[in-house]
Image (cartoon, rainbow, N blue to C red; front, side, top):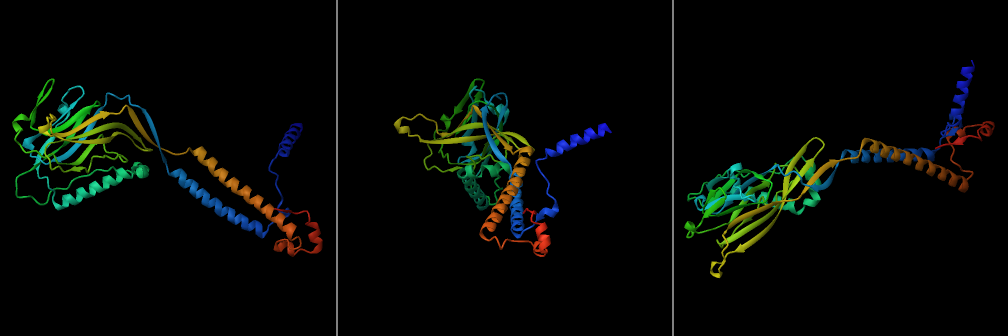
Amino acid sequence: MLRYRGVKQALDAVSRLDAFPKVKEEFVQSTRVGGTLSLISRLVIICLVYHEVSYYLDSRLVFKFIPDTDLQSKLKVHIDLTVAMPCKSIGADILDSTSQNVFSFGILQEEDTWFELCPSQRIHFDYMQHHNSYLRNEYHSIAEILYKSDHAIVYSMPERVIIPERPHDACRIHGELTLNKVAGNFHITVGKTIHLSLGHIHLNSIFANTPTNFSHRINRFSFGDHTAGIIHPLEGDEKIYTNGQVMMQYFIEVVPTDVEKFYSHSKTYQYTVRENLQHIDIDKGMQAVAGIYFKYDMSALRVIVRQDRDGVAQFIVRLSSIIAGIVVISGLLSKCMHLIGDLCCPRSHDRSPEAASLTPSEQKQSKGAIIIS
């Protein structure tokens, strides 16, 4: 019995510490003002909760830059371009800074073709050119959409429908190479090359009288695997030259990029490019070799693109603060409106139908009622 009395006293002490006192229903009076504010507050709460849930489900991108310490991995490059010269008159070669001929990591195919596209191919290439140009110009505005999508941009030239009745006047060079992650030089020049243990030799002297035309069209030039959000600036590029003695140089900086999404993680590369066109005037003593040169180098920084969103605990706190804030503000507005109504119109105070139907004796008993809206 004494134990029960002690437990009851402890519970009574805890009850006296209640910071949320309860009001009996007979002391609560509903008003039209309170009902209107309650309806408005509930609608506002539903609207804000909907936007908060949508914001939580919609992720954001976080970009981070760190030093690239992965020097042992390989660099995969995809090449598909067309030069306005027959394959027998030109040669493609690539060397890295270690003077190692990297065709041991892959072979580029040379295919005789025609430089002029058939109508269906021209429509496709013009679309590819326009589309890639738009993505490059508006990239900072649409980068988040591209990264969140699961669609990697890959262009594929359709097969030729109309076959010209003339000899081939162009060469399509295409293939995939796996290179070392060091600076290198991929170039297309007149003549063929002989590969030696310490380098290579260009046999272009025997092609001195061969007409040259280094107009070219790039269908594909990318590093690494195709990943959503990565744009390849050179794809869709077309250069037409009237002077055959030109040296077109592309200076490429390759940036390792990690794309970390909620359900996938991919490692790829993106690149920036600068162009330099030099016309070779032999009469002025210029000794440059005409051709197309792609000089690439690796960036010392790695870009990490991570898809992120707020934690569940933070999401619950934000929802709770929204609901509690609206409830408190609506309560303050209700009290202020009742106070203003009592000061301005004390006789025409808004009463509920139940209060209006009370007898005078009952109204005297309900003077101590608490109005809660």
